[in-house]
Image 1 (spheres, helix red, strand yellow):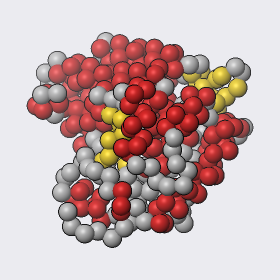
Image 2 (tube, protein in one colour; image 1 turned 120 degrees about the horizontal axis):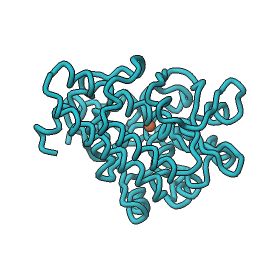
Image 3 (cartoon, rainbow, N blue to C red; image 1 turned 60 degrees about the vertical axis):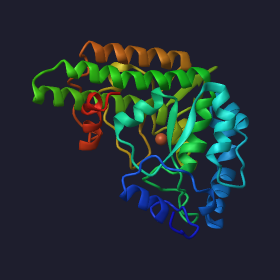
Length: 305
Ligand SMILES: [Fe+2]
């Protein structure tokens, strides 16, 4: 390995940029490359989120934070995280160098692996970050993976991606197959967004947060629960799969579930809809399904997965 200067700041980390350029998606976490500034970013992010988690996060997340024994003072070692996580649900955090094409991502979930970014945002810009970082992935997502029902939901989601490929393989016309695949990927991305990333839960009459995009955002977690500008509705599958979203501002529309068992049932129903061809033509709009995402699905059978 070439010698790298210690720095794993998002978009400025030569170790990660090199891996990305060389096409190495799954990588190691070179822990010695975290700089003091990287640890400082983690410390500040963690310290300011803690009281917000206590106030707004659902109980499974709070229990997960305790069970993972995350160090508030330093960027976590994924090996340590996995030592606590794996015995609980079989999940593990798997370091990646960048964007994971959609099918590969869902297939990882099916195998109880969570693609995890190792870089961290700049300590001077804690708020806005278009890319995921290790704070979003490990402090926002991974604590949820300690919950059995939630973990099973993610696995089911991964299975749903395989069901989607099975369905479109039966469509012989290439144009129709591509249209159906794009539509299903869009529907799955919308469902994932409004649940795993931005989901709310109603617990004993109170609104709590379980979506990781909210759990890792100092400003939006409070906004999601308290602002009169947010519409909050019980999750309806036919709505969510047709609902466009934009990623660059606070979400004006959020959906709630009552439990992770209910969320699991929704994913089961989503899979039934895939099988029945009901998602082959959902409403157009965001998110855009890029070529790499589409290809990752259409190439599955060639990779023999
Ligand atoms: Fe995320």
